[in-house]
Length: 114
Image 1 (cartoon, rainbow, N blue to C red):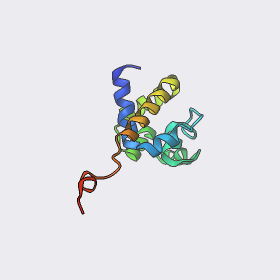
Image 2: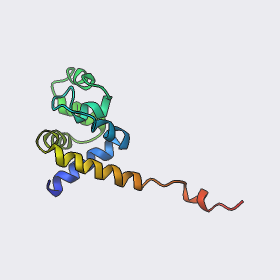
Image 3: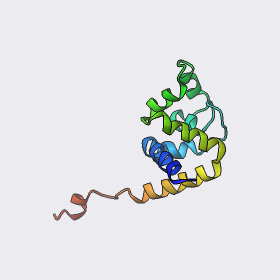
Image 4: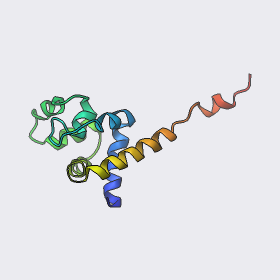
């Protein structure tokens, strides 16, 4: 996976957040009704496909839904379909780093004196 692909995936992961990325990794399919983005966004098969059926610009619907440009959606779809192993590895790495970055308490609380 090249650096540009990693940037696109990271952008999508940041827009989705850890909970939805984790949920998306449970996906097993490669169609709009059961792919990573379908499970990540709605948590169940077919829901995203039903939403997309309302529009002719399907990837634009997904981009607007998660708050990323359509180019990012295109990369997520392409990498999920053609390099799922690397996709999953980067997602796992991103999840680990995002969990490590979460502070346990605000700095002001941690240093507050009674």
